Amino acid sequence: MVASGTFGYAREMQGIVDLHRLGGILPKTITAEPRIGNAPWRTVETSAGLLNAIGLDNDGVDRFLDHHLPYLATLSAPIIVSVAGRTVEDFTYLAGRVGTSAGVAAIELNLSCPNVSGGIDFGTNAESCRRVVQSARDACDVPILAKLTPNVTKIAEIARGAADGGADAVCLINTVLGMAVDWRKRKPVLGNGMGGLSGPAIKPIALRCVHQVRQAVDIAIIGIGGIGSLDDVMQFIVTGASAVQIGTANYYDPTLSMRLIDELPAALGELGAATIAEAVGTLQTIKK
Image 1 (spheres, one colour):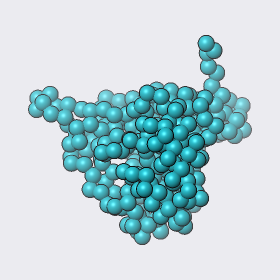
Image 2: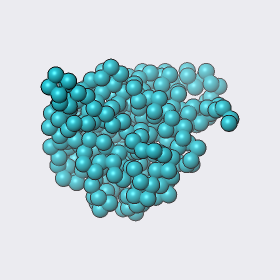
Image 3: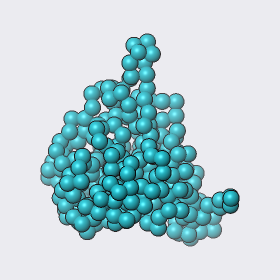
Protein backbone atom coordinates (compact mmCIF):
# COMPACT_ATOMS: atom_id res chain seq x y z
CA MET A 1 0.00 0.00 0.00
CA VAL A 2 0.99 3.64 -0.27
CA ALA A 3 0.57 5.68 2.91
CA SER A 4 -1.80 8.59 3.38
CA GLY A 5 -0.24 12.01 3.03
CA THR A 6 2.61 10.80 0.81
CA PHE A 7 0.73 10.01 -2.40
CA GLY A 8 -1.61 12.97 -2.84
CA TYR A 9 -4.95 11.89 -4.31
CA ALA A 10 -3.16 9.43 -6.68
CA ARG A 11 -3.67 11.63 -9.77
CA GLU A 12 -0.27 13.17 -9.08
CA MET A 13 1.42 9.76 -9.44
CA GLN A 14 -0.46 8.27 -12.38
CA GLY A 15 2.31 9.00 -14.87
CA ILE A 16 4.98 7.42 -12.66
CA VAL A 17 3.33 4.45 -10.93
CA ASP A 18 1.05 1.72 -12.32
CA LEU A 19 -1.69 2.49 -9.82
CA HIS A 20 -3.64 -0.65 -10.68
CA ARG A 21 -0.86 -2.89 -9.31
CA LEU A 22 -0.93 -1.46 -5.80
CA GLY A 23 -2.41 -3.41 -2.92
CA GLY A 24 -4.11 -0.29 -1.66
CA ILE A 25 -4.09 3.49 -2.13
CA LEU A 26 -4.58 5.77 0.87
CA PRO A 27 -5.31 9.33 -0.25
CA LYS A 28 -4.49 12.32 1.89
CA THR A 29 -6.36 12.37 5.21
CA ILE A 30 -9.67 14.19 5.04
CA THR A 31 -11.64 16.00 7.73
CA ALA A 32 -15.26 17.08 7.95
CA GLU A 33 -14.46 20.67 6.98
CA PRO A 34 -11.62 22.00 4.79
CA ARG A 35 -8.38 22.79 6.64
CA ILE A 36 -5.63 25.19 5.57
CA GLY A 37 -3.04 23.43 7.73
CA ASN A 38 -0.15 24.84 9.71
CA ALA A 39 2.00 27.88 9.01
CA PRO A 40 5.35 27.27 7.24
CA TRP A 41 7.83 25.83 7.49
CA ARG A 42 5.95 22.57 7.21
CA THR A 43 8.75 20.12 6.44
CA VAL A 44 12.38 19.77 7.51
CA GLU A 45 14.79 17.08 6.35
CA THR A 46 16.79 15.32 9.05
CA SER A 47 19.86 13.10 8.81
CA ALA A 48 17.72 9.96 8.60
CA GLY A 49 14.19 11.07 7.84
CA LEU A 50 11.70 13.87 7.45
CA LEU A 51 9.94 16.08 9.98
CA ASN A 52 6.53 17.30 8.88
CA ALA A 53 3.89 19.53 10.41
CA ILE A 54 1.42 19.84 7.55
CA GLY A 55 -1.55 20.14 9.89
CA LEU A 56 -3.95 17.96 7.87
CA ASP A 57 -4.30 20.51 5.07
CA ASN A 58 -7.15 19.10 2.97
CA ASP A 59 -10.24 19.96 0.93
CA GLY A 60 -12.81 18.52 3.33
CA VAL A 61 -15.15 15.56 2.91
CA ASP A 62 -17.61 17.21 0.49
CA ARG A 63 -14.90 18.13 -1.99
CA PHE A 64 -13.29 14.69 -1.60
CA LEU A 65 -16.53 12.85 -2.38
CA ASP A 66 -17.49 15.15 -5.27
CA HIS A 67 -14.10 15.60 -6.93
CA HIS A 68 -11.45 13.12 -5.79
CA LEU A 69 -13.37 9.90 -5.16
CA PRO A 70 -14.90 9.64 -8.67
CA TYR A 71 -11.37 9.46 -10.11
CA LEU A 72 -10.09 7.11 -7.40
CA ALA A 73 -13.05 4.79 -7.94
CA THR A 74 -11.90 4.19 -11.54
CA LEU A 75 -8.73 2.50 -10.29
CA SER A 76 -8.64 -1.24 -9.69
CA ALA A 77 -6.52 -0.86 -6.54
CA PRO A 78 -8.56 -0.77 -3.31
CA ILE A 79 -9.16 2.79 -2.06
CA ILE A 80 -8.71 3.10 1.71
CA VAL A 81 -9.79 6.55 2.87
CA SER A 82 -7.99 8.13 5.82
CA VAL A 83 -10.21 10.30 8.03
CA ALA A 84 -9.49 12.43 11.10
CA GLY A 85 -11.67 14.29 13.58
CA ARG A 86 -11.52 16.24 16.81
CA THR A 87 -14.45 14.41 18.44
CA VAL A 88 -16.08 11.00 18.41
CA GLU A 89 -18.96 12.60 16.54
CA ASP A 90 -16.57 13.80 13.81
CA PHE A 91 -15.30 10.28 13.24
CA THR A 92 -18.85 8.88 13.27
CA TYR A 93 -19.97 11.44 10.70
CA LEU A 94 -16.99 10.83 8.42
CA ALA A 95 -17.31 7.05 8.64
CA GLY A 96 -20.97 7.33 7.73
CA ARG A 97 -20.31 9.63 4.76
CA VAL A 98 -17.22 7.93 3.39
CA GLY A 99 -17.86 4.32 4.39
CA THR A 100 -21.16 4.22 2.53
CA SER A 101 -19.80 5.75 -0.68
CA ALA A 102 -19.25 3.63 -3.78
CA GLY A 103 -15.60 2.97 -4.52
CA VAL A 104 -14.39 2.98 -0.90
CA ALA A 105 -12.87 -0.36 0.13
CA ALA A 106 -12.02 0.55 3.74
CA ILE A 107 -11.49 3.44 6.15
CA GLU A 108 -8.31 4.26 8.05
CA LEU A 109 -8.99 6.19 11.25
CA ASN A 110 -6.14 8.64 11.76
CA LEU A 111 -6.03 8.56 15.55
CA SER A 112 -2.43 9.61 15.75
CA CYS A 113 -1.48 12.82 13.92
CA PRO A 114 1.06 14.61 16.16
CA ASN A 115 1.01 18.01 14.47
CA VAL A 116 -2.58 19.18 14.98
CA SER A 117 -4.36 20.17 18.16
CA GLY A 118 -5.97 17.07 19.65
CA GLY A 119 -4.58 14.93 16.84
CA ILE A 120 -3.42 12.04 19.01
CA ASP A 121 -5.92 12.26 21.87
CA PHE A 122 -7.86 9.17 20.75
CA GLY A 123 -4.68 7.19 20.21
CA THR A 124 -3.20 7.62 23.68
CA ASN A 125 -5.99 6.10 25.78
CA ALA A 126 -7.31 2.59 25.22
CA GLU A 127 -10.90 3.39 26.17
CA SER A 128 -11.02 6.52 24.02
CA CYS A 129 -9.60 4.51 21.14
CA ARG A 130 -12.23 1.81 21.64
CA ARG A 131 -15.05 4.36 21.66
CA VAL A 132 -14.06 6.12 18.46
CA VAL A 133 -13.42 2.86 16.62
CA GLN A 134 -16.76 1.45 17.74
CA SER A 135 -18.55 4.63 16.64
CA ALA A 136 -17.03 4.31 13.18
CA ARG A 137 -17.77 0.59 13.11
CA ASP A 138 -21.43 1.27 13.86
CA ALA A 139 -21.64 3.90 11.11
CA CYS A 140 -20.53 1.76 8.15
CA ASP A 141 -19.91 -1.79 6.97
CA VAL A 142 -16.50 -1.46 5.29
CA PRO A 143 -13.34 -2.65 7.08
CA ILE A 144 -11.95 -0.27 9.70
CA LEU A 145 -8.20 0.30 10.13
CA ALA A 146 -6.96 2.17 13.21
CA LYS A 147 -3.68 4.05 12.70
CA LEU A 148 -1.92 4.33 16.04
CA THR A 149 0.74 6.62 17.46
CA PRO A 150 4.06 5.42 18.91
CA ASN A 151 4.01 8.40 21.28
CA VAL A 152 2.58 6.32 24.13
CA THR A 153 3.92 4.17 26.95
CA LYS A 154 2.19 0.88 26.07
CA ILE A 155 1.01 0.69 22.48
CA ALA A 156 -0.29 -2.86 22.93
CA GLU A 157 -2.97 -1.57 25.30
CA ILE A 158 -4.14 0.98 22.73
CA ALA A 159 -4.23 -1.74 20.07
CA ARG A 160 -6.40 -3.90 22.32
CA GLY A 161 -8.77 -0.96 22.66
CA ALA A 162 -8.99 -0.69 18.88
CA ALA A 163 -9.62 -4.42 18.56
CA ASP A 164 -12.31 -4.32 21.25
CA GLY A 165 -14.00 -1.49 19.35
CA GLY A 166 -14.25 -3.61 16.21
CA ALA A 167 -11.20 -2.61 14.19
CA ASP A 168 -10.30 -5.07 11.45
CA ALA A 169 -6.63 -4.03 11.56
CA VAL A 170 -4.21 -1.64 13.24
CA CYS A 171 -1.66 0.42 11.30
CA LEU A 172 1.69 0.75 13.05
CA ILE A 173 3.02 3.38 13.23
CA ASN A 174 2.30 7.04 12.60
CA THR A 175 5.13 9.53 12.97
CA VAL A 176 7.24 10.07 16.08
CA LEU A 177 6.97 13.50 17.71
CA GLY A 178 10.08 15.59 17.19
CA MET A 179 11.40 19.06 16.42
CA ALA A 180 14.15 20.96 14.63
CA VAL A 181 15.83 24.11 15.98
CA ASP A 182 17.59 27.06 14.35
CA TRP A 183 20.03 27.87 17.11
CA ARG A 184 21.14 31.16 15.55
CA LYS A 185 17.60 32.50 15.58
CA ARG A 186 16.81 30.59 18.78
CA LYS A 187 13.58 29.40 17.21
CA PRO A 188 12.01 26.12 16.11
CA VAL A 189 12.28 25.61 12.35
CA LEU A 190 8.77 24.26 11.91
CA GLY A 191 5.99 26.83 12.06
CA ASN A 192 4.10 24.50 14.40
CA GLY A 193 7.10 24.12 16.70
CA MET A 194 6.95 20.33 16.67
CA GLY A 195 6.12 17.80 13.98
CA GLY A 196 6.15 14.13 13.10
CA LEU A 197 9.36 12.31 12.23
CA SER A 198 9.11 9.69 9.49
CA GLY A 199 11.59 7.77 7.36
CA PRO A 200 14.43 5.33 8.12
CA ALA A 201 15.05 6.72 11.61
CA ILE A 202 11.75 5.37 12.94
CA LYS A 203 11.86 1.84 11.47
CA PRO A 204 13.31 0.22 14.63
CA ILE A 205 10.52 1.84 16.66
CA ALA A 206 7.88 0.65 14.20
CA LEU A 207 9.23 -2.91 14.25
CA ARG A 208 9.17 -2.91 18.05
CA CYS A 209 5.56 -1.75 18.03
CA VAL A 210 4.54 -4.43 15.51
CA HIS A 211 6.24 -7.08 17.66
CA GLN A 212 4.51 -5.94 20.84
CA VAL A 213 1.08 -5.60 19.27
CA ARG A 214 1.36 -8.95 17.48
CA GLN A 215 1.53 -10.60 20.90
CA ALA A 216 -1.47 -8.65 22.20
CA VAL A 217 -4.17 -8.80 19.48
CA ASP A 218 -5.42 -11.26 16.88
CA ILE A 219 -6.45 -8.71 14.23
CA ALA A 220 -4.28 -7.87 11.24
CA ILE A 221 -1.34 -5.49 11.49
CA ILE A 222 -0.19 -3.13 8.74
CA GLY A 223 3.43 -2.04 9.13
CA ILE A 224 4.49 1.55 8.44
CA GLY A 225 7.73 3.38 9.14
CA GLY A 226 10.97 3.77 7.23
CA ILE A 227 10.33 1.15 4.56
CA GLY A 228 12.67 1.74 1.65
CA SER A 229 13.73 -1.71 0.47
CA LEU A 230 12.58 -5.32 0.16
CA ASP A 231 14.58 -6.19 3.29
CA ASP A 232 12.53 -3.62 5.20
CA VAL A 233 9.28 -5.14 3.91
CA MET A 234 10.29 -8.66 4.90
CA GLN A 235 11.39 -7.53 8.36
CA PHE A 236 7.90 -6.18 8.99
CA ILE A 237 6.24 -9.32 7.62
CA VAL A 238 8.17 -11.84 9.72
CA THR A 239 7.71 -9.60 12.77
CA GLY A 240 3.95 -9.77 12.37
CA ALA A 241 2.64 -7.39 9.69
CA SER A 242 0.31 -8.84 7.05
CA ALA A 243 0.83 -5.81 4.80
CA VAL A 244 2.92 -2.65 4.67
CA GLN A 245 2.51 0.97 3.63
CA ILE A 246 5.22 2.93 1.82
CA GLY A 247 5.36 6.52 3.05
CA THR A 248 8.34 8.88 3.04
CA ALA A 249 10.11 6.84 0.36
CA ASN A 250 7.45 7.96 -2.14
CA TYR A 251 9.07 11.40 -2.06
CA TYR A 252 12.61 10.37 -2.94
CA ASP A 253 11.89 7.14 -4.86
CA PRO A 254 8.33 7.28 -6.24
CA THR A 255 8.65 4.03 -8.21
CA LEU A 256 9.77 2.02 -5.16
CA SER A 257 6.38 0.35 -4.70
CA MET A 258 6.57 -1.12 -8.20
CA ARG A 259 9.99 -2.65 -7.59
CA LEU A 260 8.93 -4.08 -4.25
CA ILE A 261 5.96 -5.83 -5.87
CA ASP A 262 8.31 -7.36 -8.45
CA GLU A 263 10.86 -8.46 -5.84
CA LEU A 264 8.47 -9.88 -3.24
CA PRO A 265 7.94 -13.40 -4.71
CA ALA A 266 11.68 -14.18 -4.67
CA ALA A 267 11.97 -13.11 -1.03
CA LEU A 268 9.09 -15.35 -0.05
CA GLY A 269 10.80 -18.16 -1.93
CA GLU A 270 13.91 -17.70 0.20
CA LEU A 271 11.78 -18.42 3.26
CA GLY A 272 10.14 -21.41 1.61
CA ALA A 273 6.80 -19.62 1.74
CA ALA A 274 4.26 -19.80 -1.06
CA THR A 275 2.18 -16.91 0.29
CA ILE A 276 2.72 -13.86 2.48
CA ALA A 277 0.45 -15.38 5.12
CA GLU A 278 2.92 -18.25 5.59
CA ALA A 279 5.68 -15.77 6.50
CA VAL A 280 3.69 -13.43 8.77
CA GLY A 281 4.73 -13.49 12.42
CA THR A 282 7.39 -16.18 12.01
CA LEU A 283 10.02 -14.21 13.91
CA GLN A 284 11.95 -16.37 16.36
CA THR A 285 12.29 -14.50 19.63
CA ILE A 286 14.46 -15.15 22.65
CA LYS A 287 12.52 -16.74 25.47
CA LYS A 288 13.01 -15.10 28.83
